[in-house]
Length: 431
Image (cartoon, rainbow, N blue to C red):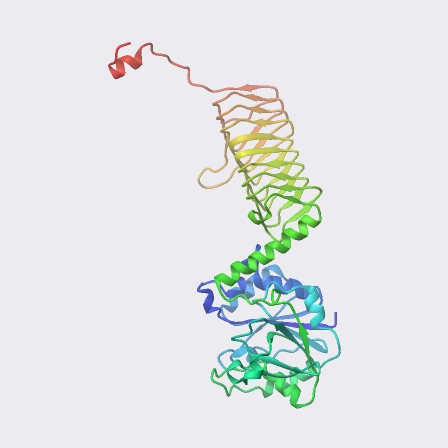
């Protein structure tokens, strides 16, 4: 790892129209900045993130997730712009790759291409069929000659389809010389990183164009861009998973967090959502079910089941309209219409429809423990904290408020009262 990387993440992102810093908007479960950091970590151990707008919030998010990232706060009041963001940064290695924090789709392969070769500067270039609105990159004899803003282009130059993608790999020695020389004598009164290209060409330094895909270098500047990047990222995630053996019904209707993992042969039906660091092992997730930060092992969920965080299902069947939260179920059947929260339920137990673990007393959450081979009848309320031992039957309609010993029957029902002919007396109708 002989490359230093600087990720520029200081901008306000006003076009996002949000109080959330632009680089912290999520794509497939992770802030877009983190996608850039993760790609960088694959090729470098010297990474600096430049921040300014809402710096404390961005710093906190980075430090919560990573412990090996350098943070540099831009002096944007004195030195605005991309060139200003690089002032005062000292990198470790002979080459420095400069990325943007709002490019979450970049891959390791592209980073490797940008850092290869022995040119003084590698500059990312995209070929567009319609380059209107972009500055043109003029290339002669395989080298970048200059970058010309569209308004300054001649008619011939406007026909050039090569545009600047905004990523550079620069000799650190040149970078340290050029950055202090940048000026803000322009309409925006900002320090532009692109000016180092002209400095290098004027010194007869080699500036090599590295042609990259438009998809990977797509910047996210608006909620529309965010949605488009999400689609691209989701397609990548699902394509990789299907090639590794995951079965998906109507993949376009499925959402999968980039942090989720799959083992064995898993089936995801249409409308499924997998969130957080969920782990699925030989799991069948049926239509319109949601799995969040949970382990689903040799089990089926749904249709329309919901598994909330910190749950672990093993050899278990969860049916429609069943919600599980922070619970461990091993060899359990819960077919329909139940809530199982803060519970531990062991093998062979059956949970009837309408069962609720009453885990919250208004102040604290309490645990329900259910042993092996317990039959819980429909419409049962289990008021935690409570322990139900092995081989217990709970009659339908029971409210459990005490621990139940092994082998017992627990039943609580109001005696049924039948009043003959009451219907006719009430409505005043004849027989």
